[in-house]
Length: 288
Image 1 (cartoon, rainbow, N blue to C red):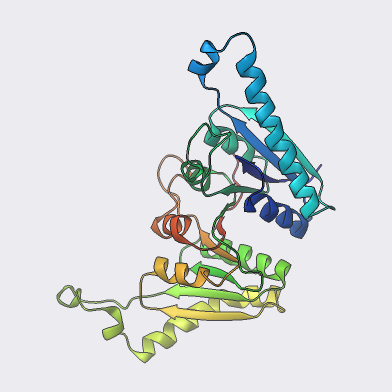
Image 2 (cartoon, helix red, strand yellow):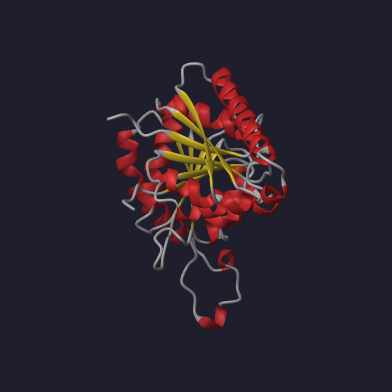
């Protein structure tokens, strides 16, 4: 059985996401599949004479995929690179590819093959609904920066730590684990900032909980240096601040409702919109 590929959706060439995806394919020792989704403009197609419209759009799509393949091979010559032009609604077609992908990679915004749609809209659909892990490439990753992971006490924490430790080990990077906690408060003090009522004992208890979460992963990845950052503030802006000096930030997927994975959660969505480095939504592969 051939290995699952890293799949990257592109709307044009010469952008950061191609280099990022090619490097990730090398780090994971997997093939890279480049996908360009072409959405027909039915009105223009009807108005065009003969095959003019078809020839023009397919020629433009071929130029995009050819340039993307050249860029990926120049960046990582040892990676096996293939490319496809698909027809349809961009998010829907990329979600189809995600079923067989090891990792889906999309950019934050763009135009071109997505018929004027902001890629931010497409990337959000892919990040929230894909049946596996997704990276949204945005900002500028710091090559010497750490991997940052946001953890809580949910079942998704182990998935986040697995992805974060694996990414840090592959990059020879340190790992910063961020955990937010707020002490229990009575209603009458709900307007008081947690920092004004938390105690050193609560700090120590929160750190102990994180250390317990990390213990099995430290044993599996003994060469990854780990820094724990505890905060009593909202986790989303703290992670955005940490991402400014990171090469990757990892968050979990807290999907609920009738469509699995259809709800990423406020923290993940905040990072997709504001982080200054690529965001990995860690999610176990699901059968679809």
